[in-house]
Image (cartoon, rainbow, N blue to C red; front, side, top):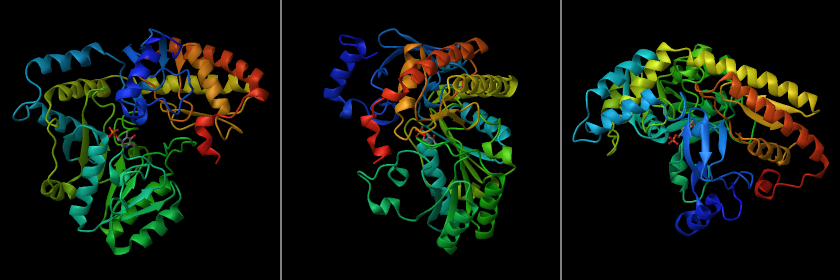
Length: 422
Ligand SMILES: *Cc1c(COP(=O)(O)O)cnc(C)c1O
């Protein structure tokens, strides 16, 4: 961690000179406690080693991509074997057809697939197809929902023109009246409703989808001839072996996938139903690396495990054990801990902690005890975790809650998060 003369400190000093802001994007530790490592050297199973060799039980799972465990032998062997036979070539391999067959067989609504690299590619293609299909422009988005970092969905206005954000109407997640008001505002220009499968925004409690809200989104799209898009890039395969909204009985026309379906290898997908096939064939979308064969081999092995193992029930059981154990230990320490979202994608926020001073302190204490948790972003469980790992996390949590209890009156404000309470 960031001790003087540590590898992490040395790398940060060098990075400050050659990488804007020292690090960019979601993996920058700029908004994490100061002792969080920025650099890592390796990972295996549920564990990470930072650049200084400290071992950490990792509840971030690479911000989602790690589903079956880091450096999984079978998945990585599939990747490496294929890579050595040719990876990015003048055309795709047959694996692209195998993978499209597998994904459309797994995901109920899907009849076709387009493969790309990042989740943001898939959400952008969804937007283009909805506009091509309807000949209209307006999309409804939930306020605060993340769909990628391209200008149309960027979460910060810097470097983005108003034109790139045009034709967007916002509603509040799970609020049917605001969804209906947004649809009324879109009027006869509605191309799509973009739905997050659950509310998994940063700095705020998560929420599962209200089935009535999901059904209303479907009905409004049907009434308008618009397309319903579920952005399953983050939640996909951690809630269901299908599109996440299958759990509330609603099928979208398009769903975007990424992060974990090749267990960390670079591939994402847009899946679509029959109604959108023609428009999908009319847009032009591509990328130099989108036909790469090795990530497809890794995806096929990951999906085999999805179909043939109890990975989902396993992480659900672990998630319940973690949630129950944390609730007991927080209560015993006299602390109010809110645990929201599905147990496989937990978020922890403390009561009466608007600038996260309690969350920061507790997370640092967890890190000192060898457990990497995030103070304001949802976390992820992976199938390589064991009940022993959960119990290790619970032991760390017990000590960390006690330490927090002891310091509660003397915690200072978290300067780097002052925007939360400004
Ligand atoms: C991460 C994410 C994206 C963007 O995926 P990238 O691979 O980072 O481009 C889109 N939607 C959701 C819900 C995400 O969590």
